[in-house]
Image: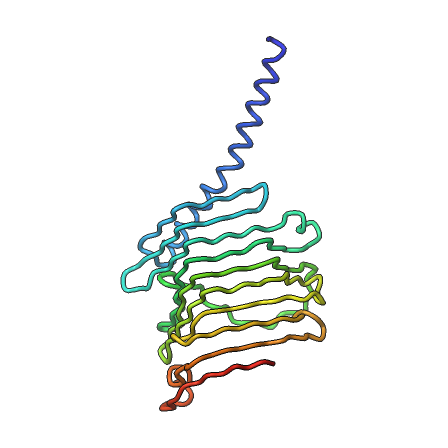
Length: 243
């Protein structure tokens, strides 16, 4: 028993460290997320759950609700992402999974200030003349992406547009390190209450891109789309286009 005591202590310490590493990052991330959103203009931030697995690069956020007086809410029912640690050794930022569901995303411009719901977005910094730099050796890639039940809008002093995503999906990988690989994207939703569907397939990252594009749109009111440039234009647009 005496000889086993050091082994038992060591095992307990290692187990405690493993548990600490597993759970502490998620708590810190949840705290920082709430803190930053409050600093950016939110009055209230609620997060149903936030799970982070530091061993695998998996992050999942559920039930995020951000509110402020006289501002549209920012809501995310579920956001899930996972990156590949192994790919980082080859200077590749590879997103294995990316899912977004049951969200409300409303982008507004007021007095040169952009907001996503109640959250202030940082202004873009002006470009300055900088000496040319060598291209980065890092490459990005996305294995797959799905979005469902997303309600979004874009509002400025000149126009207001609404986009509902019933289902959007990147069905095949899109990697910078394999630019000739075929990829496929599909979208089904509504633009200003008009049914809209998009299907694309091809090699958009290749040196000579080749893409098949299909667009179906039904009874889109032109006035809301063209008002800033062609005031008074009336009519509806429907199309079944393939390029």
